[in-house]
Image (cartoon, rainbow, N blue to C red; front, top):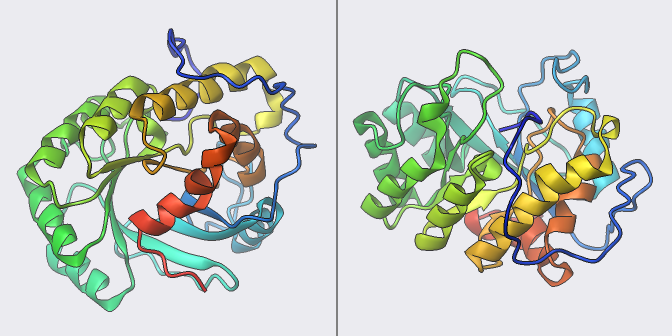
Length: 292
């Protein structure tokens, strides 16, 4: 999902922009005239630096970075149902309840009914189960009843003990077909399986993708060619293949990457006319976000 490695280069692009790719992330300006929703963050504040990015994993740092990037709301993926929900003054919050191996259906249902949670996050790969595992199916039925989306971690993982065969996005087609009235989100665009994620989202009306966490860490350490190869080209290809501007959402996977740095790069994969949908509108619609 995250680290730069020998990802196969896209061999076909629907469009590549002619804008100069002088990706000096420190100097690029972010337009703040439009609201932005970061549809993939983690707020289990550990009060220390993140081991991968070096970013302080604190509420103060998150509030600072959202202000710098012009982010007005977020979708936070909790590690479990036991995580306390922090008060995020000034931002529109949406929290997903995290599910791993064990499915606590009654706890998830109570959290959704109370409004504490507004979505479900299933950590494929970290949990050694495919998305079509029988234990997960009651969650999909509940999500349909409650009209909330189910988000899947897909692709590469941040720990060595995870098993990526379970996080391949192609398997999500199984549940998308079997639960056509449930909304599903493929996180990280299935990285490095971008084409599989694109096909599942293209084929199924109830499947969306978020473009979070494709590169992580201190992005100032990398070259412009890295951004083009590992973020801009694959995301551009996926966007063009899906051929539906309502299907893809912006996200970062904070604290694994600086919000403004990542935003300045990934938005260049999206045609200017569609950036409002990518950066804001799609997340508002998919997650039923009620803005202040």
